Image (cartoon, rainbow, N blue to C red; front, side, top):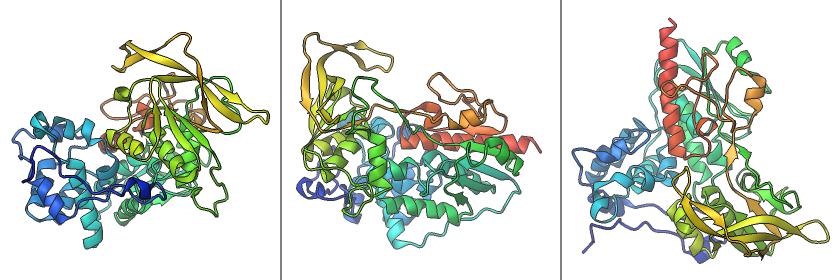
Length: 462
């Protein structure tokens, strides 16, 4: 008899097999498993899960439809609030949002909301023809800068209101961080391409290889006839450790490494930028990017992979699921360890990471306990390749091209919290370029709020 206090397990690839390639690790529910998990939902009257969702999905509603054998209807319900359900079902940190407040979690495990969302989206993609509704034009044009989760969501919302939307993407592929940042074993690229194609079918125009701030400025886009602009360009500028040896050969940012993996297919034998012939890899950081880089390195490099993180496992910001998968795949974890310098060999290549032991003090501004160095504890971790993954900040290109955009000291754009408008009239922003490193679903929520602000702005100008 099933224990209704526990989530229905999701099938996964065997760790020994999955480290040999980039196929998706989690295999998803079939109809029987989805029905079993959906039956755990209590269909609560107060619906706390909906309040916990940044885009306000009718969670009990779509789960009820799965329970009733209607995954197609569940997909329709999801799409009413979520432009990217197949993506969110895979990478959204439901455990910190909708599932965190699930009533089932009071006495057991929450309902697998994300797993069910993925099931409905995947069922639609494999069983139904995608025919999104096209809204009649309202005669207004809006530009969206960046095709990541914030930009795609904003474009989807505006297209649904009848706006002619053009998305400008700096790279040659759409999807932003969904494409260049998240490895295919977590988010297959055909899933992203499918979601983007759905937007195109709704009438959204997407222009790639277009760097706003260089190809054209925001002011020039306005002169081209766009009545409002949304900036969802993310935060792609890596943060550095600023310690000795960081410029040595063999020290990379995790962002560069993941871009090579995801966009340039560096894991293939015929790649123009192959990576990497290493015997010992160290990854510095404890977030999802660090875990992604470590798991990619485990798949394509010959040596051991070690994650160095200055706090304990409990403080890691990465998803628990990804930490669990990384440990299953043989990645070593050195907690309460902080790098202080990179050592080099005679050829000027990194040969190790000088570290010190840490202990946890009082909580800092994030609520996590502050790591404090333990004197006299320096030691060396051997490494001929290192990846730094300690966060990112917004690229300053847009602000340099359009000085009327005000930003914080960290480079994040300043916006009106209610409407999303920046200090430049008619220009709105949301996602990581405003909040700094955050999650896909929070960026989507910001794109959704900004779309409402843009609509009100344009309609009030009539």
